[in-house]
Length: 205
Image (cartoon, rainbow, N blue to C red):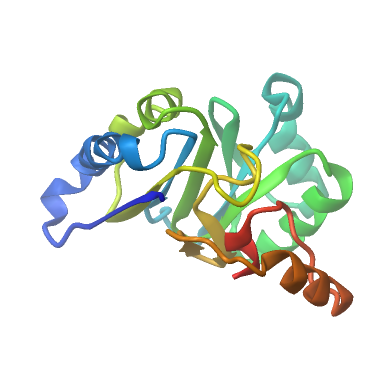
């Protein structure tokens, strides 16, 4: 049993309140998912820029100088905005794939949570209220967002096992329920070259 919330704002004047509105909705779902929580916020970057949201278990060390290192590697300006254990890296849109490749090769300790022009994914272990406070969710702005509170049934309570999952550029997935055959499906998909970052059944689905 998990909780799912979502909000799409048709009135652009409400976009500064998106985070606050989603925070209240997420906390309401605590009874349905007290183990971990996550949120995907859609906020368009200015100009021809794209962004990668990354997570680290040792953010002080991992994020120190990261934007400069990334900028040097891709030959373009990169900026970083940290939120607790996560950070959003922004760079020219045409450098996005190159940036992903650099991070995977040179910083394997970093987990890429999301990528695209608009989406930012934040998730951690803990009660929804605590997770929202860690990321200052109530202060976030944007046009729409999706949130999830998890009650673990099929795998351990970890950051990797929390939702949402990135499924492509500016795409994400949340799931309520369980897949009873996810282990056999995972083994089959791995034989076909598919990589997984968690033991969560949702990632298989």
